[in-house]
Each structure stands twice: as structure tokens, then as C-alpha cells.
Image (cartoon, rainbow, N blue to C red):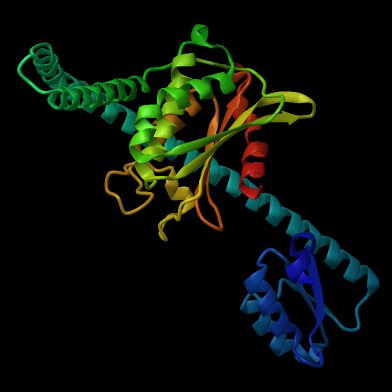
Length: 353
């Protein structure tokens, strides 16, 4: 009964002397498995020494002596239920505070990553400039080289420009967003553009993206360039982290509560095995490794999270029981309303879904 309904049971009352086990033995098991359930023992005064030991070990919250008075039993039960409700409220408050603390720590770490990326990106970008200039000159002086050489140079040039563009984007995510830059956005259209724009990047790993858009996706307020970066960063994260030939499913879902459109949930789901030491809380830490590849620093993922937070959104991660990961972003329709206060339902829906 407790295994099936322990979340609905606040108080358990047991006699001490029973055929197969004593009441204290039962309550010790209950305390170990369901510590918030209030435990009451009924016993005669002849068992007083045993009762004192049970209270001292924490197995019993209270006891009712036999023969009991109905009014005393009623008062004991009411007091036990009030204690249980307080324990539940305190636990929920503690969980909420811990969630807030984790979010602050994560945001601070991600902000540090953004600043580091900005500094590194600036210097590396400057260092790449003469390289690109040299390649452009070589391509212009292509009379004495074969087509194969030119093709190689063009490939190197494209890679360097892609790196330079990415570093420039990483450097810009730490900049604060201006309210006047927020405009209504068509997320399905932006997602289609981002998938098409990363075709060359995905081709290197033969990464296939499946796009699913639920009906009734509302427009969200956001900065177009930043949301486009978020989408491209997440695709780049999957390219770097997943083996060749992988499939990623990107799903857009409307989030509506009490008839009000709150925003859009955007899920990135893959189907590859996850390293045994991967824990969902650690997946969002900057520089966390999703696998054994040391190149998988998680900078793209951290940057995507940073952009979502700038839009008063959220990011949650889940390791699937079969295999693979799901990263779910929530982007609110109206960031200026303080959408953070409405994210709990989204998070719970995602974690338990």
C-alpha cells in the first residue's frame, strides 16, 4: 500500500504486537523508505522501555498508550497530519530554493563562458585574418595550379570563414539585449532557415534533422539574430557531439495554460547512447563532456542556454531511459511580463513527460 500510495499517505498508525513483525520494525522500514510519513505506535505501558528506544532511534514520531481515549487519539492524529503537511511544505520550499540556486550558479558559469569565448574569439579571429587573406591571394593566382589545389584551398577557406563567424557569434552573446530589438518571431520559419543554413556543417557528419511542428505555434517576442544563433548553436552542438550518420529530431510545441498562450517549447532529441557518468544536472554545465571526445566542450550548449535566459526562457535536459538526450527550451511569448514565474509547469511537464 505504501509503495503504491505513499505520496497520499501522511500518517501511519500501527500496533506494536503483530503476528509477523513488531510495530517498531515496521516503522523503521517506513522511516527508511518514506521519511516524511509520520509514524505513530500504539502500545501498552508494559512496553515502555521498547517505546523509549524506538523514539530515541527516530523510528517513532509519537505514541498512543492503550487503552486510549478517543479524544486524545484524535488530537494526536490531527497534530501528526499538521506535522506532515509542514514537512511537505518545507521540502517543496527547499527544492524550489535549490532549483533557484542551481539556476543562478549555472547562469553565472555560462556568463563566464561567454566572456571567455568573447576574449578568445577576438584574438583567434584576428589571427585568422592574415590566413584568409593569404588563401584569397593564392586563389587569385591560380593559373599555375590544378583544379584539385584550388578546390582544397576553397575548402580550407570555407572552414576558416565558418570558424571566424562562429567565434564572432560567441563573442556577441554576452552583450545585453535591448527591449526595442524584440519583435514577433515565426519560430518554424527560423528553424527551417537554420536547418538549411547548416547544411554544409551537417554534411560533414551526415547528420539528419527531422522537424516536427505541432499546430498552433504562437509567435514569440525575441531578437531575430539571437534566436537564429541559438538554433545554429544547438545544431552545431549535435554535430560535434554525435557520431556520423546520427538523427536529431527538433520538435516545436505550443505551451498554453488556462487558455493563455505562454510560449513555445522547443525540443532537440537525439537517439545515441550516453556516457554512463552523464547526469542530467551536469549536462548543462559549461565544458561538461557528453561522451569521450575531448572536443565536446559543451560551449555551444552553454551559449544556447545563455541566449534563452536573455529572452527570459529556460533550458532543461533529460537523459532518456532507452538511449539519447532531450534538450528542451522554453521561449515565452511576452518576455517583458517576467515569464520566469511561469516556467515551473513547463519544467514539470518536460521532466515527467
